[in-house]
Amino acid sequence: MAKIKILAEPKDETKIGWFVHLFSWTEDDQKVISHGLILSDKGNGKFELQSDDLDAGEYGLHLDCKGGGREVSLTVKSPKTTMIYPVGGTWPMKLTVPGTATFLNDIWYFSIQGKEGEEG
Amino acid sequence: MRRYPAAMATSLVLVPSTGLAQQPADTNADPIVVTAPSDRFDEVFIGLTTSIDVSEKKSEANASVSGYTASDNGDPSRIEQNALMWKVGIALPIGGTDDVIKDPTLDRLANGLKLSAGLTLMSSASSLENYSDDTYAKLGVRALAACDRRAGGDAEKKRECDEMRRLPIVSPSFIRKHLPMAMIAANRAAGIPFYTIGVKGSVAFKEYEAVDPVDLGTNEDFKTAYSTTLTGVFYPADGVSAIKAEVEYADALEELDETIICKTPIGDPAVDCKSGFSALPEREESLVLRGEYRRFFPVNGVATGVGIAPLVSFDALSNDLGVEVPVYAVLGGESPIAPGLKFGYTKDGSEPSDANEEFTVSLFLKTSFSF
Image (cartoon, rainbow over the protein chains, first blue to last red):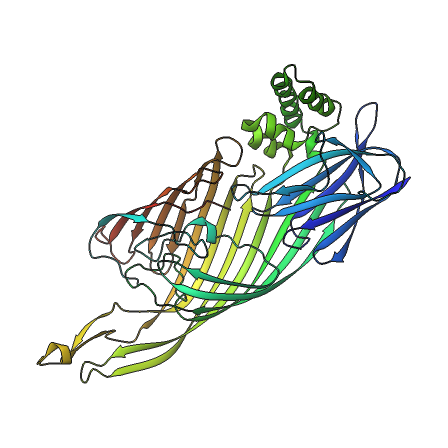
């Protein structure tokens, strides 16, 4: 069991217009299970999102940015993760809404081994 | 009543890039037509912000202080956020204004010291539940098939397809990558509309001068002008469009055209004549209703395509009408040009006939389309 800690770094240093969901799924019918995240302001335009204790396994991280030009980076700081999608990807994962769009969203998948540790 | 050319006019204007603050190039001949999109929708910067805006119409220095409060609520699968942003700003003219080209933003307060304050509410939400939509699931299946086709015999590429296939939700970036033309359909299926509502008040101060034809002396008067604007912007779930409605009330000053004023009788024109305003400006109220639709038509993803931003403005007090239809070519990448065309039409509501209509066509070379 481990708490998943995610560092969010919005370019405009505000919590306006971006949303993060953490989820897992059931093995049999792939029913999505949402996990609550508690957001705390770490200062200097950085925010931390922390889950409850979760089992080792695979998780999805959804980022939804609203508004042209908005840019947010996410890094799973702990526990150590292995990226599933994108294949070979590394944290941080970033979304930048181009000026020609009003929002942009994405989902990244990773697995955790359940042992607390800092992402290198 | 605003001034219009005496007769119907059609013009073609070539507009270069305007530099410094990347202000959009714009040369409408009438103030009822607003400028290009990139400065129409408010951006949110928190803290102290300063900028210098230089355009063919005006040069001014801006400073503003802004902040926000935001509250999130909802269950983990659907989060809703209401953010209230405030902004107090000052604008100082740092250069002359162009009397030939009228301010296309219908901003009567543009030429003097201006103070403004505004509040904007942004209401938005995000949900995982929408990804269970059948349409989205079908797009995911098509994207997976496209991934397989692209991978061919490449084991590494095939691995990406296989990994995504076993996951519960096909990632939006995976669909954008392998099925770029389905981006809008995926947005509609999984996205959630959001909106902003804003109110803004401004007051401007300026000293006006008029030349007395008796002795060519100067009469000066310090005047203030006011405006209040209520704006709503709705962003549909397609992710590439926006609908804006706005009401602006202004109690401002209408400057006359600069002219040559001479004493009578004229002896030496160099001594007995002077350029300037023949009278101090008069107050004029306006109640302008604006409706605008912005849409980007992507060609391949959101990097290239065509953007449009038609706008209709109507002054309910004077019946003045303005229509503007800018069309932007977005070439993407490091293209040195961002060309576009803007078609404009204005009509003076005080004239029953079409005598005071004006059509304009502007060609610009580097003005970016944005929301």
